[in-house]
Image 1 (spheres, rainbow, N blue to C red):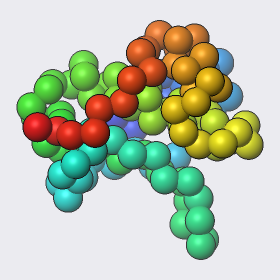
Image 2: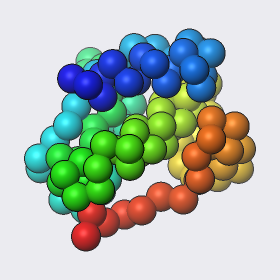
Image 3: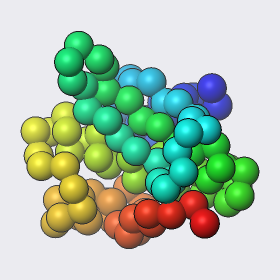
Image 4: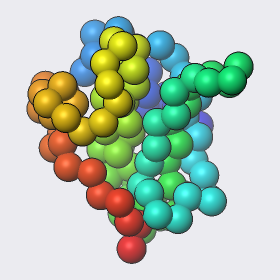
Length: 107
């Protein structure tokens, strides 16, 4: 639940409280991604998932960077922009203080 609290803190500090509050889950089943943003669909709310393996292997500070990365995807979705790592993503990532690079594997 600590990452859920950090979502609120980062939303206030880096996004001027512009993002909706959504669930942030830490999942064991994520094997090939560090994190993932899932937009709302089929009656399910949007959510961010962070890999348990990522938190254990790379530490909480790196998990926070991944959370911010996924929050940029949330921002894209809520601003009705295409999801992805294009120019809008890269510009917003720089604005919130992270690199726009996405890592696919958790090792």
